[in-house]
Image (cartoon, rainbow, N blue to C red; front, side, top):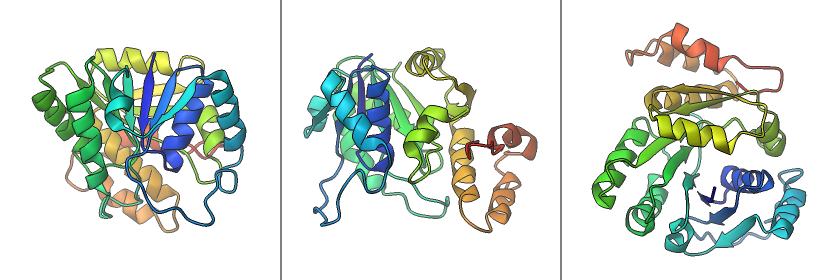
Length: 243
């Protein structure tokens, strides 16, 4: 299936290159155009990424585009990787989502599965689905939340060796598409409501920073209906550092 990844920061680029390595035709496009830095370089911050990048470009399974409307036009699945934060109280740059959502609503002629990857504001998955259905006129368009467990400097290994993935969706079609995307990886996929998946992502981010246990416990009991029993199976930290 044709996959588009919008956002080529650390998470988006690793995701795009890795999906292309799994032989999915993948197109990556940037959401913003920051000024170049003198120390820019892929290999310096993510071991193994240069090699996969060269391999997938040679195979012609990976392409890049500068125009968002072009990027989404032929996509079966559209990942939006706009950034991460380590706390639900931190600001996520939601302004980056607007051009991506407008491009999808007005230039994606098919019925793509839209994937919000990583840390997003609580409730954004369902809000995004409402926005896209309203402006695209497609009442069956599905948006899912996709957790990501990639650590800085170990992203390639974490993508291919994660033992668990949590997807926030209630759509049967979204489940089928997700299973197809990751069919060649030995990974257990768990499905839950998007709001639960969004909180699970925050919990994982919190587990990567010191003194995080109080933060994790605080939202397990915060009145959102997210009890310890519901989250504990998905938050178990395995030997590879992934939930």
